[in-house]
Length: 205
Ligand code: GRF
Image (cartoon, rainbow, N blue to C red; front, top):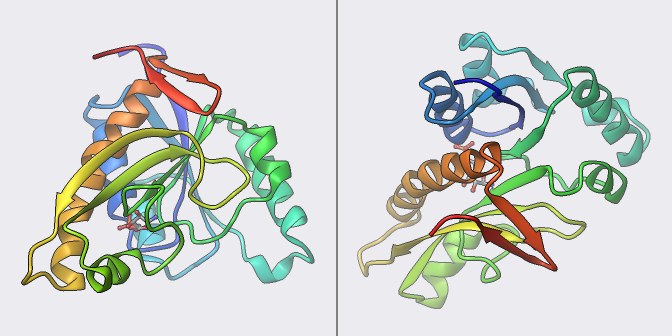
C-alpha cells in the first residue's frame, strides 16, 4: 500500500501490543510502518521484541535528565528526526508533559485496559474484580494533558465471570486490546478520524 504513515511506539512493558502493531504493519493490515521504538527500560520485553523485529529502538533513561520537560524534549528530537506521524503508547507507564502533548496534539494514542472513563490509572483489573463489575474492557484514546482522559477512539467490552482471576481477565482484555489498537491506528492512517470538541467522530459506520 502507498502513503504509509510513520509510527513511533513508546513501550516499557511486555510488548504484546507493540508486537501486534509491528506484525499488522508488516502484513499490511495497518497502512503504516513502525519507524521507531522508544523505551525508558532497557530490560523491557518490548525492547527485546522490537530489536528482534529489526526496528530502530532507543532506550532513554529518565534518571539522566533533571526534569520531565528535558526528558520529553529529548524524546521529541527523535520523533522529529524520524518525521513520525503518530505516536502509540503501548505500556508506557509515565505521564507525558503538557509541552510534549501540545506539540503532538491529536497525534498521540494510548491503550488502557478498562472502559474509560471508568477505572483510570493503575490496578484497574484488580479493582474491577474488587468492585464486582460485570463488564469491563479496553479503550484506545488520544492523549491529552491528564491521565487516561483524552478523546475516545475505540472500545471493546469484556465480560467478567465469577471464576475470573486477574490473570484470566487480563488475558481476555489483552486479546481485545490487540484488535482495537490496530483498528484505531488504521482509522487514523486512512484519515477517518475527526475530532470535534472532545469527541472523536469516525467517518465510517
Ligand atoms: C496494556 O494492558 C495496556 O492497556 C496498558 O499497558 C499494558 C501493556 O501491555 N497501557 P503490553 O506491554 O502491550 O503487553
